[in-house]
Image (cartoon, rainbow, N blue to C red; front, side, top):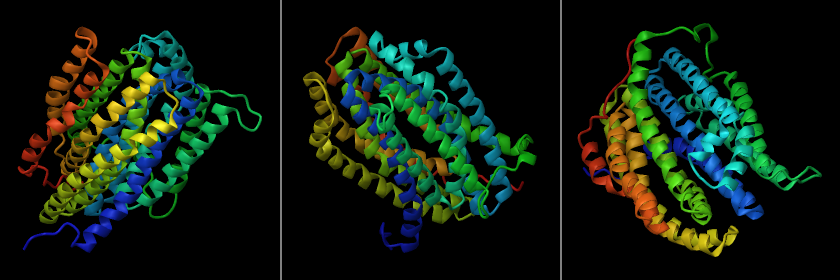
Length: 452
C-alpha cells in the first residue's frame, strides 16, 4: 500500500509540535540580523556592512558550538526515546564543558585581536574601524551563547520544544527593541549606532541564559547534575566524540567556507558587501522553515531509532525527504516574491541595489538545494549518527569546486560580482544527486544507545 505524506495523523502532529516551535525560534533568531541590517542600513550603509562582516566571527563560533550542541541533540534524542534520563543529563554536562571552553576562546579573540579578525573579511579601513567597535562589546555575549544553546538543545529533545521557542522569541523581541533604543538613541539616550546593536545583543543573551536556567529548575525539565558535572563516562565520551568530530569537521568546512564567501564579497567593494549582507539576511529568514523541519524531523526520527523502532524511523525518514523537496520549491517561490519588497526597505546605492537584485534571483534556485540538503543531511542522517557524509560532501562540493572558482574569480580573473556570487551557490544544488544516492543506502537507520 502506498504511503501518503499527510495520511498519518500521529506523525504529522508530532512533527508539527517539534517543527513549528523550532522554525519560529529560527525565524526569531534570523530576525535579529534582519533588524540590525534594516536599522543600521537606515543610518549608514558602511555601518550595516561592517556589522555584517564582524558577525562572521560569531558565525564561525556557532559552527563549532553547533557540532557540540547537535551531538547533544542526536544522542539526547535517542536516549530520551529509550527513557534513560540520567544519560541525557550526562550528555548535557559534556556539552556544557565543551561549549564553555569554546566560548571563552572566541571572547578572548574579540577582546584582544579584533583588528586581525576584521582583516580576514575586508581590507576597507572604514569597515575595519567600525567592526572593531562592534566586536569589543559583542564579544562579551559570545561567552553566554554556547551555554544557553546547550540548555535549549536538551529542552528540545526532552519534549519542551515550545518552551525553547518562547525563550528564544522573548530574547529576540528584547534584542530588537533594545536595538532601536540604543541605535537611534530613543528615550533621551545617546545614539550609539553599531555599539548600540552590540549592547542590545549582549543584554538579550544574558536574559536568555537566565531564563533557561530558571526553566530548568522546574519539574519535568533536565538540569545539569553538578555532582556529576566533572565526572567522565568513558563510553559516553567516546560516543560523543565519534558523533561530534565529523560534525565539527563539517561545521568548520561549511562555516569557514561560508565566511570565505562573505570575504570574497568584502574584497569586491562596499556595494558588493552591502548587497551580500542583505541577501544573507533574507536567505536566513526563508531558511527558517527547512531548519525547523530538519531539527524537528531529526528529533522525531531519533526518538524512534533510540526506542528500537527502526522500521518506523525509516518510514519517517522517507516522509521527510518528500517534505524536503516540497519545502525547497516553496522557498524558491518565496525568494522571488519578496525581492521587490526587500529593495524598498533598505537604503542602498544604485550599484548595491543592482547587485542585490541579481543575488536574489541566483539564490532563488540555490534554495532548492539548501532545503533538501539541510533536511536530509542535518536532520535524517544526523538522527542515526551518520555524520561523516556531510564532511565528505562539503570537502568535495564546497572546497573542491565552489570556493576555488569564487576565489579565482575574485583575486585572479576579476569576474563580475554576480558571476562570483553564482559560484558560491554551486555546492548546494550540485550535491543533491549524491545526497539522494547516500540516503538510499540507509546507513542512518541505527540505534546509537548503550546500556549505561
